[in-house]
Image (cartoon, rainbow, N blue to C red; front, side, top):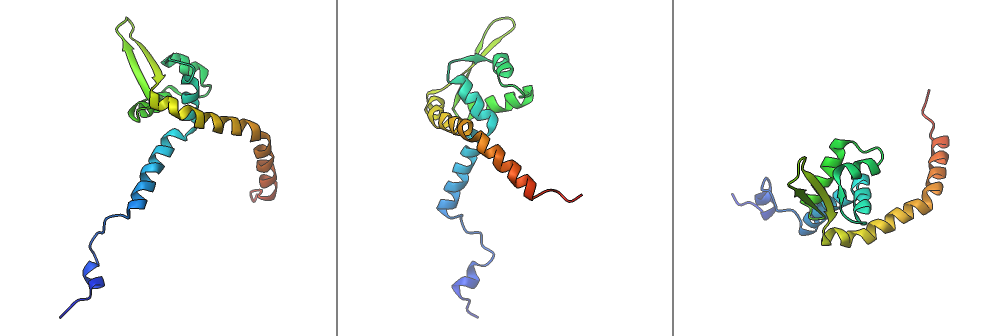
Length: 136
């Protein structure tokens, strides 16, 4: 019994298409740098190093856990540098790395765009909500 090539390949895992892998990798990066808290943290650190509690006070509404996860993720991605000073209590500063500074201009562009168009977006929300009222 001879099998056709398509029958031979059934059940065998093929490696993912290279473009799919690239899109997944880019998607993970965008998920990190594109979330609200990461963008706001990058913006805040664009002015220079800050202490953890200073960042927390300035970013209204962020929890300590969310800020910890945010700066840890940015540090892991090489965007933020964490420096611990041997004082009592320990002082920890966060600052943008060169890679993080290279991201500031695109982040700034998105922040400016959001500021310029927030009224239009709020109006679009209201119009959508008027048309798509939940059933009661």
